[in-house]
Amino acid sequence: MSIKIGRDCYISRSCVLIGDVEIGDYSMIMDNAVLRGDLNRIIFGKYSNIQDNATIHVELNHEASIGDNVSIGHNAVVHGSTIEDNVIIGMGAIVMNGATIKGGSVVAAGSVVTENFHGEENALIIGVPGKIKRTGTDLLEYAKLNAASYQKLRVDYLNGKYDMNYGEQSINHKS
Image (tube, rainbow, N blue to C red; front, side, top):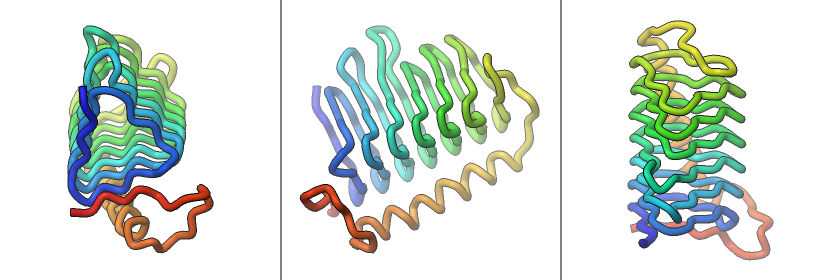
């Protein structure tokens, strides 16, 4: 079990990475996020971001696989599930073991995606339990734009644009 961090990532000093965690190039892990790959592995794709206080965890028989260009919102929980490319997991949403969120989808803030849910591509998933409200390629475009906005922010953080108040400087991984 090891932690592997890709090129030009921004990794906040206050996040926690445990166990078997692989973070793809150009990704961003924000304050107090927890990626806990203790029981299984976490694969976190390229150009993806996890925002403040979000958690990714695993089970013995469920790894967490996060695709490229994924945004995981503040306080969200992704637990032993698969998130394909170009997805937004909204603030406070929960995605449970064995669930698969297909590419181009958006899980609305506060929604709970139950165990073993398998969505459709370009789906808007809303509610408790999460259900597909509609599909459309506009969701894919929205997810791509959201990820791109976080890429600009990642570069700003790497370049020291914002003052930090951690008591020590953030860890910035540049190649």
